[in-house]
Image 1 (tube, rainbow, N blue to C red):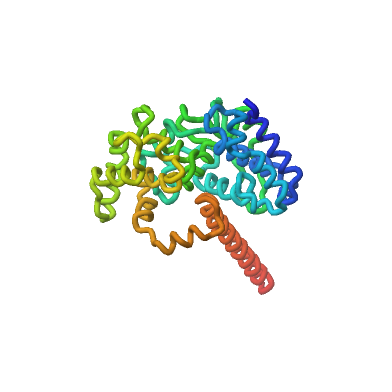
Image 2: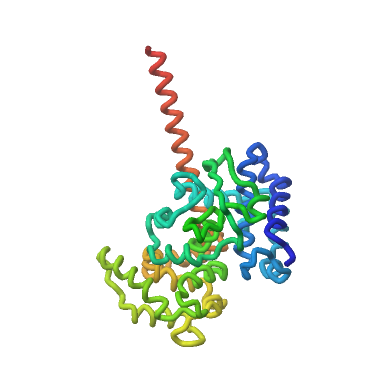
Length: 346
């Protein structure tokens, strides 16, 4: 092992301390800590393909981590460094967790996660996420720390990156039936961008019910049965499972017919669209969007400035959150001015 989780957190802390684009966080220690935790978690998610909790020399090289740090050093606007370091990306992840964690105890139950994306995920896949979904390295977390409320300007209490690096951060509650913050980061990155090895490995493990290293029709069928019930209740035409399995096989061209392996999904010619296999099984909205995709919209997507689906999603989501905060502030200002006017009249 070349870099432990603690090493990654320390390196991110140095970026936070020195980067001019993060100086606005200098008076908000709590959010500095949560930013470090999030970025370090993103690094481990993308680079630690072995899921050992520590990075090997090969993993560092394959993920071009040195290049990511160079990019951060060369760019004053941290939000332009979309690989790991963007504050806007951190804010999107943290806000979504905060919204789902309604009692703000730092834990998400299965019922909490079912609310993600307006209940777009099936219970079948949520159950598997809690059972086998990838989490940030082996660790024990007996206690949970409450999370601070999100704010574009930041403020309130959070866990430390040192604690996270030592294995006591916001994650690892699989046996107790809850999901911590870092666990959620792994989930959300996987859900919003299924066009890379890390996310495809995440969902592959969830769908491989018998754990034999291949997704077969027997693995797929239980998930698709749930989808069929949803399609029927919504008045959609239900595609027979045999037709769906044939469609997926024609698209993926697995080396062994009827058995899709992770190596089939991450081939360069298919990796960008391979995630539709999983959307077809447990995210009806995304699967329908793929089936009904507009060729002109697809062309626009290829020509836009974003490198990944995650970058594209985070950009839109951050703008939505910023607009909502502006509207809240405007409403508060209006309420205050009306209150002052009423006092003057009195």
